[in-house]
Amino acid sequence: MPLHRRWPRIAIVVGTMATIMVGATRGQSATACRRRWVGIWSTSPTSTGSAFNDQTLRLIVNPTYGGSRVRVKLSNRFGTDPVTFGAVTIARRAAGADVAPRSTRRLRFARQFSITVPPGGEMVSDPRHLKILAFEDLTVTMHVTQHVFAFHLAGIRVILGTQAPCKDYALGNHGTPTAIAARNEINDWIRTSGVSDGVVDFHAALRDPGDPDRLRADLDSGDHLHPSAAGYQAMADAVDVALLNDAPCR
Image 1 (cartoon, rainbow, N blue to C red):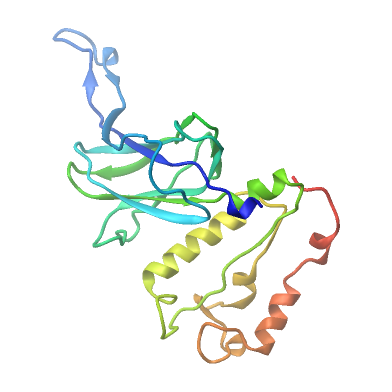
Image 2 (cartoon, rainbow, N blue to C red):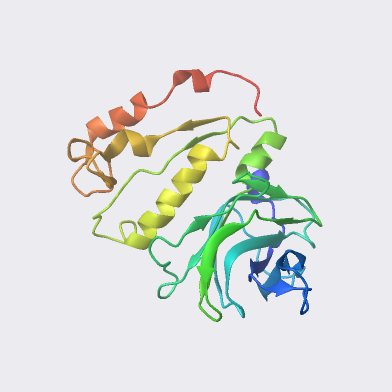
């Protein structure tokens, strides 16, 4: 069954454009200078290690140089199956695995947020502006998903639903700032990646207009996590029944 396959290993290489001018000597004009991409951190691709399936991974990266623009290279060099990255972001690290406010940059690959790296292949992101300092920790966050790709190979249509808000939920980690940031990142990918055959935006149906990370009061069962009966009706109303027609998958 597709859900029980072992997926290829992942290796990450990160580089930054450290605005270094090279190739010019005294007497040459400034136009003779060139900018080059300089590798600032890497991990060796390997055929051993953990396999990941529908998981979000966050790497802590300690760059050896500073710069103002960044690129990320993803490698599937030793993989035997394609690996789909639903979303990749880079940010400055705050503390632990948390990211510094307003530093997150969502990366595109050939202008696409979601990319599939073929077996033995590598892909490099488009440049993004992010000012960093040498030895200032960064985070690289990746959502690795194979479900949609595997279901499409089997001829099965996939409808994705966004995750509901749950700010102020008292138990577990669901309502923490870190969890909220991850949930919003995943929901943005669900809405914009285009990998599925349709999207049902449960988050939009349930959120409080004044605080989108919180359930709307009249749709909240009281624990700030589970919807009320009216909330479940709002979720049902959010489903476009046309999505349930027996149309071919993408």
